[in-house]
Length: 243
Image 1 (cartoon, rainbow, N blue to C red):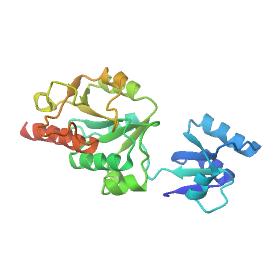
Image 2 (cartoon, rainbow, N blue to C red):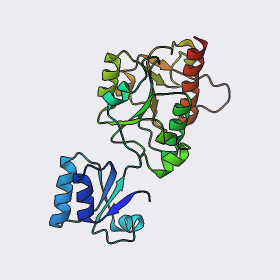
Image 3 (cartoon, rainbow, N blue to C red):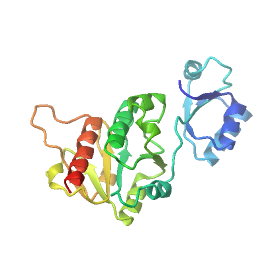
Image 4 (spheres, rainbow, N blue to C red):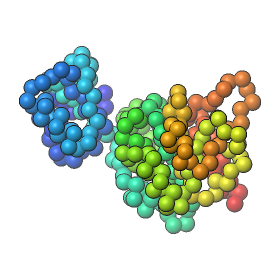
């Protein structure tokens, strides 16, 4: 597994050093004082912790993990303000927002399409999201090294912020009667892509200015989320080039 740190003290030191940590695994049922201190440290730093059987930890590393393993992020994340400031003045902002995309290969494939389409960044939640690890980077064909990624605590709050900054928020959903090609995507736009199985959550959908469907003429009911994202992104490109 990519970028592993193991052992209670090394994991704690990585947290206190401010390293970008993707996920922390702690032995389920482990109740030593050191492990409890580590749990408290994770709570203070608002880090994701998974309580797992010792067999899981043994699969992650052959080293003496002492009941604690951390996965360090494979990339550096940026804040939302920084993400928006990076958009060149002569370009119309385009972002992709993830709402529950948990498959790393889908995440990487979407990142690849987004970077190829000239998107200015990706926004993903801290929880219920695919980790940006080595597999995601490989699936992105290296695009995740070239496109900024922002992790946020609340997608809903972030969308409200983007709307306040002049973005239109566009949902990709097959349930809409309005087709993608009938929308004006030449404005600053944030495209929301939902979970592989459930799509965009109801709470997030309510915040979207547009709900757009991709017309399908075959018998299959929907596209894979990464394929749908590519279609959405390159319709933006088509409209903006035509302009």
